[in-house]
Image: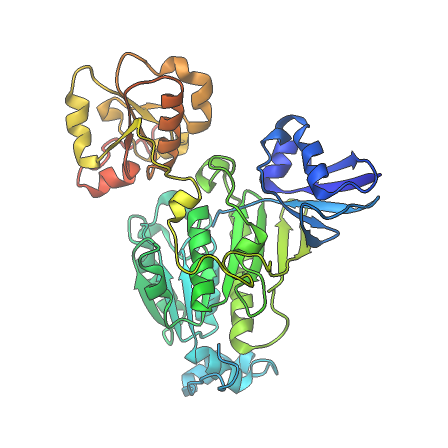
Length: 80
Length: 391
C-alpha cells in the first residue's frame, strides 16, 4: 500500500521536500512508517517521539494505516 | 472561567461607546460583550513577534487589563516583525516600549508589566488573576512552562508559534480540550530546531499568527463561536495553505490526563535538555571574563552567533573569533587545542551546546560564558565594538 506523507518546517527541511509517497506492507502502523522514514538520508534525525496526524486526526504510534492515507508529521516549532 | 456565575462586566464610558462602535453593532459582541472585554484580564507572555500583533489587537479591542511578561530589551533586529516597538525604542525594555505603544493605541486599557523571565518560581503568581494567557514565547522550555502553568491554574492557553515561513496556532488548556503536552509529548532533542536568530522568520508571518491568537483570545472572553481548542492549525505562508489537525486530550497525559503524575511546575531547562549540567565545562561569570582573558596562555574566545549578530556588537576587542554554531563541527581546525577555549553566544545556550561538542571532541579546558554577551552588557562591561555602517 502507499501513503502520502506531509512534512512541515524542520521535517520538510530534513526530507528536502514537503510531500513523500511511501510504500509499506499492508496493515503497517505509524511506528513502521516512521521507521521507514528514518532510513531515508537526513530523516534519520527524526526524533524518537514524532507527533503524527493521520487523515487530519492526531494518531498514536500503533494507529494502523490504510492505502491512500494522508499522514502529516507535525514538527515542534518554538519561534515567537 | 466559572460557568455558573455570569461573567463580570464593566460599564462603558461615552468615549468608549464611540470607540467600539463597530463592535457594538456586531450581534456577537454588543454592549454586553464589550463590557465583558472591559472586565477581562489577558496575559501576554512574550512581547515579541507574536505578542506584538496580539497585544495591539487586544488593546484596540478594549480588553480591560493586559499583562506583558518579557525580560528583554528591544534590539534593532526585532523591528522587522515586532511591530509593538519602534526604532526609537531600541535598547528600551520591551515591556516599557509595549506599555507606551498600547496606551497610545487605547488609553482605556490598563497595562501591567512584568520585566522578568517567566520561571517555575514565578509563573503561578504572575498568572494568578488573569482570564486568558497568550503564549508568544520563543523557546521550548518556556512553551512547556506556559502550558503547565496554564493547566495547573485552569487558564486557557492561546498558543502560537512560528518558524521561517510556517506557523501554528491553537487553544490549549480549555475545559476537556488537549494541552500542549497532548500534542508534543516530549520536547525535541536540543539542537534539532534552530531558533529565529539562526533560521530566520518572515516578518509578516507572526503578524498572521499573532492576530489569530488575539482573535481566539477575544472569542474565549466573549464566549462566542467555535474555539480552536482541539484543533491545531498549521500555516504555510509560502504556499498560503492552512491545514487543520484534530487533537484530543490524551487520557494518559502526565499533566491533564485522567491520572496526572505531574502536579507542579518542574525544571524546564533540564526537561528540554537545554542546560543539562556538563561537569567538563566551566561556567564563566561575565565579571570573570576580563580576568580570564588576561591569563596566560590567553584563552581562545569563540563567538558562535550568526554574522549579523556579530555585526551588531561583539567581543573582538578581547580577541573573539566568529564561527557560527552550525559551522563549528566542520571548522574545528580553527579552534586551537593548546589554549583554553571560552565560548559565548547571545544568552549562553548556543554556546553551552558548542562547549559540550568541544569537550566531546577532546578539548580539555572549555568554559561557557554564562548569560552570553547580553550578561556582559548588563554587568557594566559593554561589548565595545560596534560595526554598524562598516562593510
